[in-house]
Image (cartoon, rainbow, N blue to C red):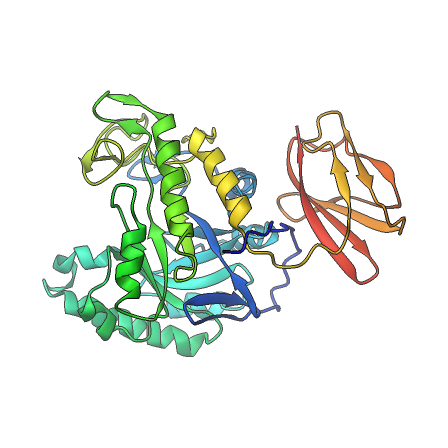
Length: 392
């Protein structure tokens, strides 16, 4: 497994720039470069009476800070400003489509650089009652939608979020599905499902859901330490299968209060399942951040693991040191042993340039910037690199 630091940078979105994403030999590639999904299932806490009041502008700095490069949605994002913001932050989207209304969306957004894959269905195989009590009806729909999307957009794969490992019926019925996502809750061992699917098909796969909640039903209290421990074991188990699995979208980004009681408060409640460490899925405690966007201990586990396992999109062209980082006194320094002039640009989370200057070796004054995450883009001639800086 390659462990190369992913150089995160923001770019101003050009809607005319269409990337080519394809799968080959169980791998996924973006413009010819291997891509690893270091992802999170993304919802904001909006449903059944809950409206958390937070937007993508609040969430993107947290996603970037956790080294998340991919989000998986449960509904299509129709706000182009939001899609632009994700693209500018270097975050790609596994975009869930409505199987009953999707062609217009694909036609409108197929060239958007935020799109990684199209996806149909989240555990629909658990609900044959939605399809005339015959699950084959769903597989027929999935095959038809996947085939149609591949005609409309040959530059992006099509996936599905299957509950557990798909059986031969599912696999044989859906040859147009390029990537099989699997929602796997097997205590601390999602890797066993990866091996099972690999023995059945040579199709690409990823873990579309896995993880642990932060509430322990046995002690009737929150236990963030246990969630962090389980998250570390689960993510590492998946990463150890990187030769046959293209990544994971951990479940989930933030706690959602609408799932098990009063949507205006956080309630324990859920159902029995093979979840560490109490065999119970507490539906409102799955986030790596709270509903109010405070990082839990598992957030920092994700941050560390995803940083160490990201695939590089470019080689580091400069031998440059930046210090201190995080920046707490309004200044940071750039040590440039080559003594070549450097063009420095700093972008905020929305992709807006907030500072620029040319230096050789100097202190950069950013005392006017608000706290948060920024992209430092460094250019010299044809060479370019980018680094993440944090202002505190």
